[in-house]
Image 1 (spheres, rainbow, N blue to C red):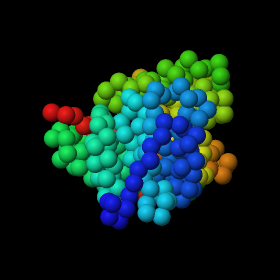
Image 2 (cartoon, helix red, strand yellow):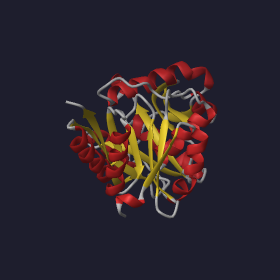
Image 3 (cartoon, one colour):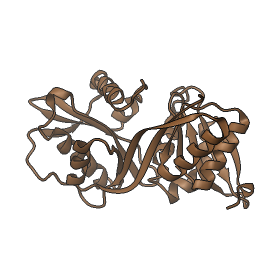
Image 4 (cartoon, rainbow, N blue to C red):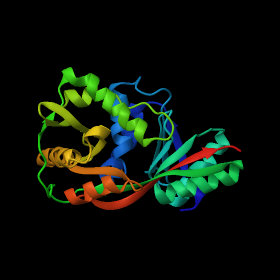
Length: 283
């Protein structure tokens, strides 16, 4: 597609963004999972992020063919785009005078965005994380015994849920980032604990389904409790519960973390794509 045939519309209204991207969510629910769930969250709670913005790439026939989102302090998220469309957005944002701390999403369009951004601004870029995109094509299983059991988190456990969500965010990201608020997830039964001896020992949560796809996130076991299979039991149970409800499961995994990669593979997850997060700076 020639760059001249692609135009961009932007909005700070989550309801408008949701309407723009409905067809893309239905067609590409895995690629659109982050934008879909975050946008839904902002429709319900507009104050969740300050100054959010979405960009839709529009082709010559007026169709939305590319989707991008920024929810500060997080980097720009590239969901659905070709390499050419990623580079075109970089050109558009530089021309508009936007400043960005980074960009993340599907590898090839993100790298095209990065290259165009660096060339146009004279800045620099550094890859800070490489992620595998995994889905679950069959019922999950744990190939070994794990002591304890799965249950949903209760609303009187929000303090622990919030603390562990922030612990996960602190461990995963180089720079401080706020964990998502999970009140609505707990109320909807989408936060799970693995419990042993009456005490939670591991936690994970899932997004509300969009396009039939739910995303497993925030898998956290406190360091002193690791190595006992709790995360394996939890992710398998939580994923199985969502599959039984008719949802398709996906997740992101840090490719530099062999432990989590082995856990997910043993449960039955398979790698279907690659994401990357890039830090941008003007130097």
